[in-house]
Image (cartoon, rainbow, N blue to C red; front, top):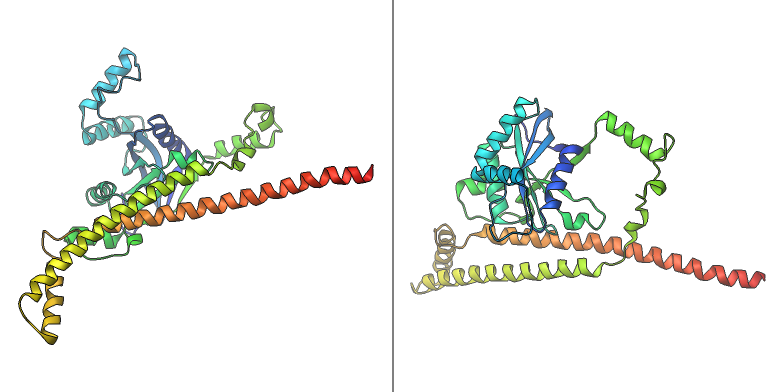
Length: 340
């Protein structure tokens, strides 16, 4: 995978997107991961052509799925391999059937946009350090997709955050600068686009939405927003509590540094200089609380607020549309009574 210049866009083949969606949907409520295969096709553009899931760890307590002997043997064999060995074996088999076998990143399912975690940051840093600086992670949210919006996000760790983690410094960066979102577009082959065009116009057979039973136009007007917003606000309150706990650690540590300097009985300008130097030196110690955790929490809180704002904006639009429809239905009976 070329790393001459950072990628600026991602093209995701629809077949690979369907594999990601199918894996994440079938594994609910468990959050799962997988590998992305593809190549850099032009300057700053990454094309993802294939995806395959990573094996889930065995859980003897889960007995709700009954599998045949062949399926169970395949799952046992996959679970016996660790993640790296399984990935190498899959790429070797795909190479034998002339499928792109160049690993360009990984994907993961998320719940209501929850992605700004230390686990995801460390995994993505490992991909960018060991695989390529242009490695990406694609996040799919099945819960938000169920409300009518396909949520596929593509991220990479920003160069500023990579430098901060590799140097081990405990400095501050803007929370929104930790992850860099890469624009992602779905790409269909020409034959698929031609098929969709024929299905859509209904001129080449009984493929219309009404006859096939796939008319879901009015599903987008669902007004039941309370459960969705309640869960968002519940998560938002939980993350705000976590941020408050992190801020308490910072205040306690800063207070201890201040007390150590004040006990030296220095006065005037010298005391202020010693205090500033002690605080700056204190944040470089190994026992100092790490800023990255609180920055990730702040970034996740911002994500929740953006999602609530976006969802409530669409909800208000639906309510105004419903109000207009009710007004039209009230006018029709009164006009018919006047004419009679």
